[in-house]
Image (cartoon, rainbow, N blue to C red; front, side, top):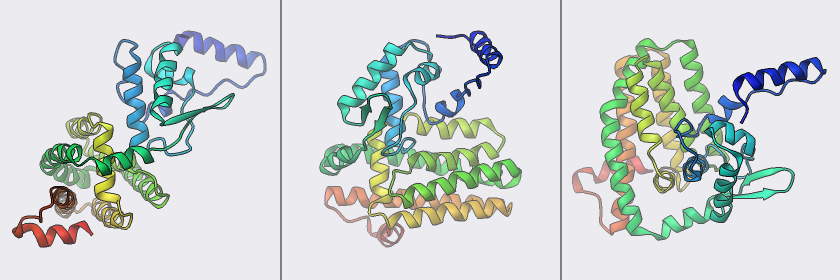
Length: 288
C-alpha cells in the first residue's frame, strides 16, 4: 500500500508527464463507514461496516461501492482482505459485480421481508431501540438547546444539507437512516461540545443492520408515516435557525418521544396487545 509520501511523489510525477493527478477521495469514501481506523485486517470488520452503510442508506440500491483500492486505503488493509469482504457481500445478496465496472448495491428487499416475518427478533430489537430512545431523550434535547445558542453559518448549512438529503432519500423510497443520523450529528456538532457528538455517534455506529431495518419499518412504513418524521425534523431546524433555544429543546424532546411512541405501538402490534390506556391516544396520533 502506498504511503502518503509515495502518493505525493506519484502526483508530482503525473504532473510532470502532463497527466492530471488523481483526486484524493479518502475522506469522501470514509463518510458513513465505521471502524476504518482499527488496527488489523480482518475482512469481518469491513463486511460489517459495508453492511451498515448499505442498510442505513449510505449506499442506496443501484449505487456503486468504492473500488477495491479505495476501500483498501480507507480501512488500511490489503486488497485481498477487501476482496474477501466483497465476496461475502455478494453471497449475502447485497451487491453484485459487473466486470470492468465495479460492485453495485442490489438492495435489501429480502432482508426487510425477513424482518417482517420475524416477530421474536423484532421484539428484541424494539426493546433495544427503546433503550436507545430513552438515552436520547436525556441527551439530544440539550444538544438542540446549545446548538440554537452556539450554531454558526457553517453549522446551519450542514444541518440544512442533511435534512435536504433526508427528504430526497425519503421521496425516492430509499432507506434514510444515514441522513437522519447526519442531521442529528450536525446538531450535536453545532453545540461545539465533543461529548454530544460522541454520544450521537455511539448510538449510530453500534447499531446492527437489523435495528436499522427495524427503524425503517417503524418510522417510514407505510411511506406516508415518514411525512410526520420529516415535519418534526423541520421544526427543530427552524427553531435552531431562529436561535430559540428553549423551543428547540422542547421540539427535539417531542420528536424523540414521538419516535418512542411509534415504536411502542409497533411493539404492541407484534405481541397482539393495545398500547397502555394512558398513552394510547397520543401513541396512535403520533404514529400516523
